Image 1 (cartoon, rainbow, N blue to C red):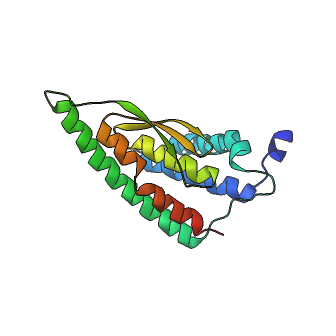
Image 2: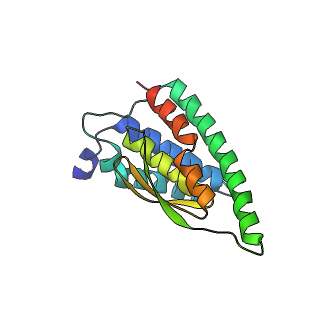
Length: 170
């Protein structure tokens, strides 16, 4: 019973669980009963496990339709960037000279909320050729495969899109 009391925002808990379960169903090859049970169980379990970090007492998760639409557009842009970066990494790897110049970049983000910072950090990691190594407050430590990728991360327009989502909220 004490475990159930640790969740302070049931609406937010349900929304995050549904999003994770939807992603599971999207990635599952078949919607058999076992896949459904495992997907829902994992979604609820992960949301419960991370609930102390996701849901702060007295700060319910809030969003509006405008934010949802902007998030869907953000994800479409992210998908496009993943494809372009994947092609770029493939050209680098297939090049006989392998023109890589790996390095780290320390960025200060304009994002104010923890959730949007995490989403942005994960967006960087999902993009081939870059990975977010650390997120500490408003600072991101990013490893990039090339110098151009490092420069691209520091002024990536996706941060502005995420900031727009953040600012259009309640």
